[in-house]
Image (cartoon, rainbow, N blue to C red; front, side, top):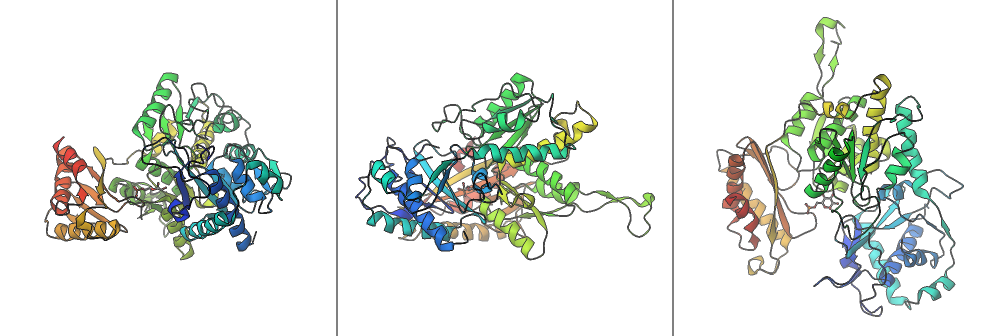
Length: 542
Ligand SMILES: O=P(O)(O)OC[C@H]1O[C@H](O)[C@H](O)[C@@H](O)[C@@H]1O
């Protein structure tokens, strides 16, 4: 959230390697100095060049809060709507919203955010009505930005303001976006104005952009929100990292629910594309549990649909989706109540890590005739077909509020138990760990090759070792890394999406079983000296 401001540590004439700023399908860089070994590379002129490049890229496609970012676009001759503080999903939404008075839909949206990354880091995300950009688009924009940067005189803000050809208007887009969320909940409750009246919901925005949910969504729906915390944006994240996967963050919202005797807690990540909840008894509804809950809701609406998830989801989740979410139906031949039976639930398609991978896979399945309505990662990114496949943490929470609002029509005293009951029967492992094994890119054992090749070699070796182990069994269907079942649990070793790291996930019914799984990995990978196995050894010795 720290804006790329006052950060021209790199002289504007210096050569900038723009392609190094690419982080998959968005841009990440260092915007604030002061951290050892992390020189600023996302300066104001660099940001401005990227913004101009995005405008040029958009124009090329032509279907068509940083001030320097805006100038980058207006000097390229485009009009700019400044939304001020906004969430990532709202930015995408503005490319779809029909609102002539507020000049929407916009042709493209660009925002400054690096989600929950440390304060000195910042980034840029881009949207068109087709969704987030892909890797090739980002590369294209960065190459254009590099050329624009080299040709530009890097004028002062004042000079740029004078040269600017486009118009700038301020629009309170978050109010427009939030009013749609409010309408959705009211609709679920038979158009009742205040369907959450009397329900106490606390929000933890972690000093990110999610504070709007209190005043613009929950209060208009009648909810009591006292005890909500960390609603003021602060990129230094003074309270906790806004990340629903983070233990400290979940502890903070759980504590807030307990302290306020609230019915429900809601937590967002910094830019609100991820979320999680806590029920009134303090039970966390995040990771596999949140996917199970969303699957239960989506399968009620779309029986039999395919749920696409990332690769680190549990075996218990598969059983839950496929076997426990079936409906009680009549026999289609005799139509007799004497022949009631449960039909099969949904289909769990465990794909790769990475929210974009998961969403793109669900979209692909639909194009080849396999119906899918939910794509969700354990990180809390979740996207629904009905919401343009946008991963929107606020919309996920609205789906939970819809459920509560509908249940309260029948029983006005109903609380979050309605939600907890939906995940009843989800089997959960007692031990769940993620251990990240670093690859030393400068180690001689890489023999000048890439860390990816090295990681692949480790995985190949592990796969061979497993095939000789009678207690272990390779997952029949797997889309990344090596996933193995054994000792009542499973593990997955895979390459990180971005870093020179092999993350190892283990789930097991007991610590002993988890250790047996961990040892199987250790035995195979210790032949690779460039792989730092300290974290794994530490876990095994605990
Ligand atoms: O592969 P890893 O290093 O575990 O990172 C995986 C994560 O990368 C990014 O942060 C993506 O936005 C997430 O969707 C993904 O889960």
